[in-house]
Length: 108
Image (cartoon, rainbow, N blue to C red; front, side):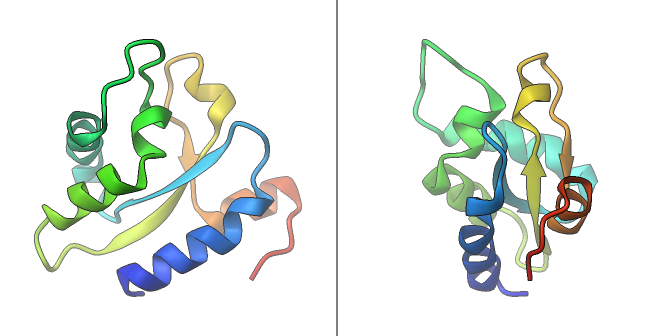
């Protein structure tokens, strides 16, 4: 999928998310994920009251800037993040398919 197709899919899927859960587009290669997230955190506007992964990864502009800095052959995917787990300091994520199966959502 192209980046634009992933963005469109992400936008269509967001109404199905449970409260507190969110999506972001990132590198498909999980070895690149922690560096990517660190870069998004660096690029996102600072929020001194509540700095979490979610504050940065929900910032579409920062995510797109970080994606543009990856090598041109890098493949992307949509991550679905479970917001409740993030409160305990853990970034638990899955795919749209896994999320739909777990929450009995009919999508696609």
